[in-house]
Image (cartoon, rainbow, N blue to C red):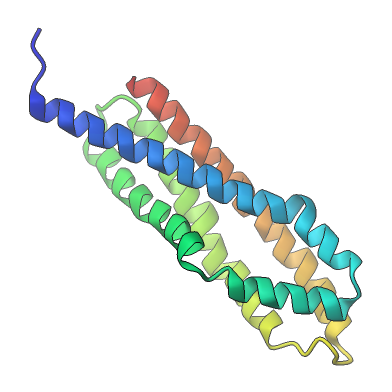
Length: 170
C-alpha cells in the first residue's frame, strides 16, 4: 500500500507539534515544580522583607523572552492541537492531544492568568518594610503556592497526555 505524500507530511507536522507540546509542558511543569518543591520553601524561611523582595524580583525577571516563548508558545501549539483534535478525531492520539491541550490551557495558562498573576501584582504593591508585609507575605505564600501546585500537576499531566498521543500515533 502506497502512502500519500501529503498525508505523511500532515502526520509528521502533527507528530512534531505533539512532541513540541509534550516538551513545552514538561519544561513548564519543571519550572513550576521547582517553585512548589523548594523555591517557595526557601523564600519563606527568609525574613519576610527578604522573601518579598526576592519574589518581587523573580516576578519581574520571569518576564523574559525565553520563559514567555515557551509558556505562551506551548499554549499556541496546544490551541492548534485542540482544534485539530476535534476536527480530526479519527487520527490516532486525538483524544490524548485534546486532553493534553485542555489541561495545559485551562490548568496552567488560565490558572496563571486568573490566580497567580493577580497575586503577583498584589505582592508587587507590597512594601517589604511595611507593618503588614509579614501578613501579606504569609497569605501570598499559601495561596500562590496552592495554585502553583495545580499548575504543576496540570502541566505535567498535559505532558503525559501528549506523550501518550505520540506513542499512539507511532
